[in-house]
Image (tube, rainbow, N blue to C red; front, side, top):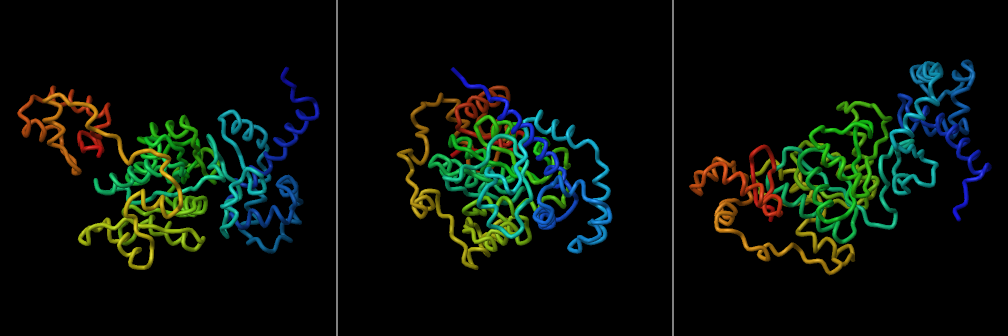
Length: 378
């Protein structure tokens, strides 16, 4: 027979929620993360700061006058319980840095976030974690290897961390899901906002497959451009290694690589053509000493992680393609083609080509990487 939570347990749960509403209030203050946890350590609890006398705020000499005024204004908020209740109703967990659940690796970095808002789960502390990041406007080459590294590392039990952005980030996380692994997205907005919006399918799949959506920004925070550079320190901080797939000479991916090095994380880069702007950043990282991404197998071997007996790729020849399917499939390659091009090359009509493309995509032979642009999956 199941035991009830009991009066003492219920009382403790209610008390915890009452305390956490003040911590959530403190976390939402427009202050640098470092100032927030200095404040908390100084005051003892978020509740103590909320009820601090106005004259005592002036004695907090480590705060600027603007920061002191920020606290004074925030003290006028009388809807703490209501806001925290909405948080719980949305299935969003609030995890402050002093919580047992807070990722220990994040505490290793100098500017760890005061708290995380989480939908779904947090990364498993026992498993290896790799961040896969790169260009938003990546090439088919970048997409292919982002997906391949994500898939094969996930198949071996590595958890994939990224920012759910278009391009490399999204493909790396899609790969992890194809490898039946877990992936975690760190957002530059509230976890209740899917950004970019066209990744709503990926957002939902991450949660349904046991992964999580993380952010240091309170729910409802819009995806402002200033939020993304600070977000990158969490992506690298929560990971054991950072894999850069494609990056221009000036890019957010290189900022993430610098942060990772400062945090003591391993950095790897995918080499690319010397005449490709998208590979310049990666080639430069390799020149400066970053690890070279040759293939997922060699990376797993370096990490002493077995492949668990899974083969590198599914045997595509097990399914015998129909003659017309094979005709369309043989016209595709690494670089995308539109359906109109395939009509010209195969001599088939557009309706038949579209039906074949849908069938090939359902069986995992081809991918539509953008509107009406198709490539082979392998």
